[in-house]
Length: 620
Image (tube, rainbow, N blue to C red; front, top):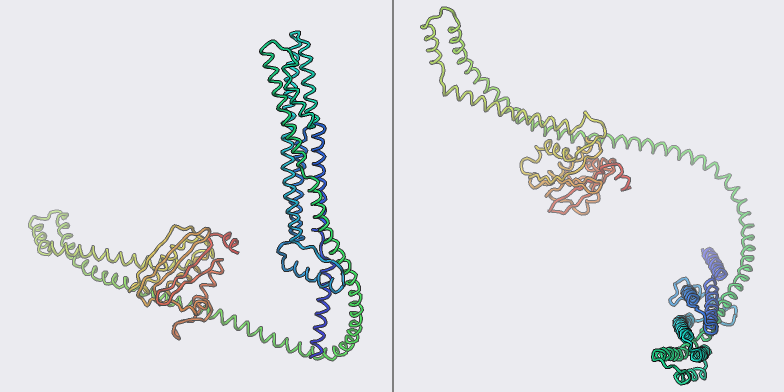
């Protein structure tokens, strides 16, 4: 036992070591590699932005679109770098990352490798600093581009204003003034474009002497010259602000920060790469050792296999006898199973016959009562008819005398006298009223018998196909009619029927469900209480509720009421198959039944039946 345990522990240790080496040798470095590429791309974008800004300053071109594209590229690269940092240097590493990190540290401590992984918090801080610097550069570049665009626009407007003024002077033959204005304005614009401090100071001096060097007598010309001077004066501070914005761009500092972050990521990448390479070498050696050990055990297994072959020959004979015994036992079990199925069928039929017997007894009782008073009414009516027959005979003789040729008045008077003596108007009227009343009562009784017979016929549905469109409300009404003998002496029936569609089912089986549920509810109330029947239409389902105010079902029995042969009735009063048959019928129709009960309050059975077969498929 100790040796077996030791072997198991050694095998588990070998598997654990193999798994650790596999994990170490397959550690992913994609995040660090992608991060290095992203940082290099950021550096290249920053340098491209610097070149674009220099071109804008020196070549006086509009580079706003190029700067916008570079800013978008920088934002996308920063987003990718942020994802790579969250993947490669998570602030809160998961259990798997923590385990891999511990395995890397343990492996390098045993192997004696110098260095360690970079602190993720430091990488995050450096990247946040790079991100802030990148945002600042993008904002400053956009601001510089806008200022440069505004300067170029004002410069072009001022140059255009100068050319127009010079052209007007030449048109009026003021060539000397036009030449002076042209030379002065061009000199000022050139100095503003050079942008040196000395040039900008001279711009202010030249503009101040504008009115002295140009001799203009017209007041409008002097106003135009003053307007041109103001426009030229405004360009100088704009040029100074533009140069200050250019000098404030920290592209070089951003490049240094991104290169520093690349160095951190590169050290971590090289450390992991070295760990992976060392672990792969060790994994190859360990794999070769395992192959040697497996070869040894394979040789041992081959020897054991030979011994097992010898034992197998001995067991073959024993297996043959065992198979024969198993076959015999299987046949016995099959016979027992078939007998059990036959017994189950007989018990189900017995339950159906028992329910049918109770049903027939109740129906006979319901038929017998109206039949008795119909028979009594018939005998009384026959006696009254005899009395009326005597009166009619006298009246017939009077008519015969009237029709007889040669009859005398004396003969007619004699017959009329006998008719008057025989007829009592009050008694005749009472006889006629009694016959009318008895006839009405007899018709009511016969109508009750006819309704009961028709309900029984509709309930059994013997004259219809196996499945048909069926309105469960009609089934409930017929059930109440047939079971009237059970609940008429103290049970109040409440019907809450909503408009519902017909369902496709076997009506006789659904009626059997209703009569079982109603019978159980009346028995649970001991003929005293309220029986509530409800119908609902929910989506593609029809719901039927049978609720009583009886004794209720204990909680420990709720899960067993659908089991075959389970009953809470005294011995001899129930087989325990009624609810089992109900559950089987509902299952066959693709529906289901739920029960809610509270001891001392009552029980409610909820039957859900599909309107169409599609509802059953959706439920499945």
